[in-house]
Image 1: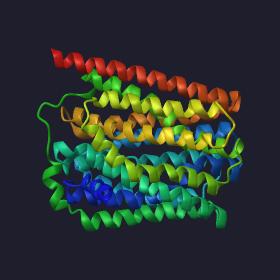
Image 2: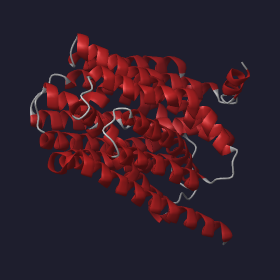
Image 3: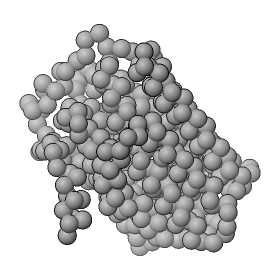
Image 4: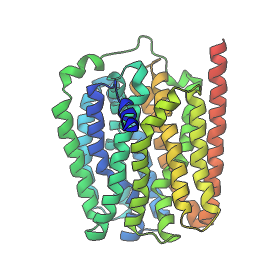
Length: 401
């Protein structure tokens, strides 16, 4: 009982608006069950080759880059409220339409458009969350949003696996679209423009362009490299589970759902404990990158199926550490300039990873097999860690000046 009370206490002090944003994110994320199964859908249901799927996933990433950039610009110009409304609603319609595309060109264009509209939501939502949070609880606000994402993600793949087994992949697109539209209706109902007008108009005088923030640039490159390895869990890893370990879609959904449930139960207490420690954000991100890199390395140690659970646990703990503190670091640096622009670049770093990461991973498993691919992913993780060590040094020396 005391443990439960301590867990609840970690959520105290967050604003009502942040809780509403978390609910909207939960509704939206619960429906994005098609994403973990997208590579399987393209290879198994539509019979595309790994090479074709690699380029389709690059269109996914390119749309994400353009969407994140556009979302940041539109947020700075029109405010987060309007961007969030239009992005959510149009994403719902586009997801429903996506199921009717079945040629290579139409899927490239369709997925590009879906991600362009969908990822314009992310910078707007982050600015909204920052606006509704106090400086001392921004990291916990981020963590609450991530809890909502992962609660939805823990249920989504499991339900998605059941839908594929009992119905078809078509049902996933309908649920994705309808939940986005439902999230739009909730957003309109609970967050009113009048309450966000003042926050929307907050501007930094003489904002510093992100391109002049050298520490932020090093951080972005590190996050791009990290994104390349992390995103394999949404493209090559599900195929690996099915091809090498013969898991069904339902079993894949349960394994990936375990990731979301662990995050939902443990991330907030973990983050609160880490915040009370002496380690800097850069040091904590370094630990997170190490664990995620190790999750690929261990897959080559044995053919025992239990290693999949160990790998997922390593990735989960690493993810729980790196994402809240990288988000918090980005928002901290964004206080120097236009928030939308800074936070859009943070999102773009992962969108760039979408462009190259899925394509590279799928091409590598096609040409050199899973084992060599996992070793390369481990090496990329080391490169990300080296940049975080450089970032830590830059931040430390700047404080000494």
